[in-house]
Amino acid sequence: MSVSRVEFTVVGVPQPQGSKTTVTRKGRRPVVREDNPLTGPWRSTVGARAQAAMNGRQLRAGPLRLRAVFVFPRPAGHFGTGRNAGKLKPSAPLYCRTRPDVDKLLRAVGDALTGIVFRDDAQLVIVEAEKHYGEPPCAHVVVEELALEDDRPVPAG
Image 1 (cartoon, rainbow, N blue to C red):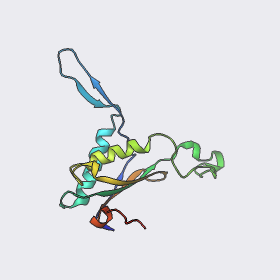
Image 2: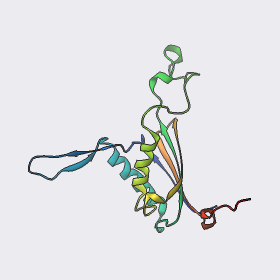
Image 3: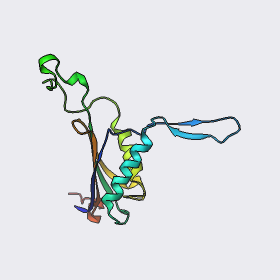
Image 4: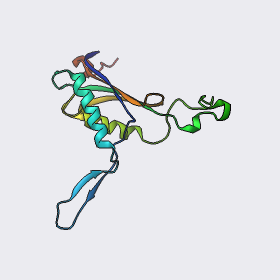
């Protein structure tokens, strides 16, 4: 049973948080940067939407469930040509089975929500994610704080 729920949608193509690269310049401190230059702006947008959805509420302190649905634009190859231009092919898949990896998408969302919705993404104990094709490209995020009774062992027998 959910005690508290935060739900919001971020419009835009979801971006993964992948590896970081350390750049060293002679005579200067090393700088760590994201391999994907779009990760920072995406995380900022997710954070802003989360902040608005929190509406001044305190950070969630207990165990949490995160559900994220990532929606990506369809590639041109999913559509017909000629007189079928603009029509979706019957063979076009619903799920996005290509990059980016769902775990890297979740990493970007988890880091964006840290300090806004929860203290630490280690509080996420149940995580569900999907990648679909559709319009508009976006990420729909739901974070639910689990009731304390959900965090107790189930009696055997």
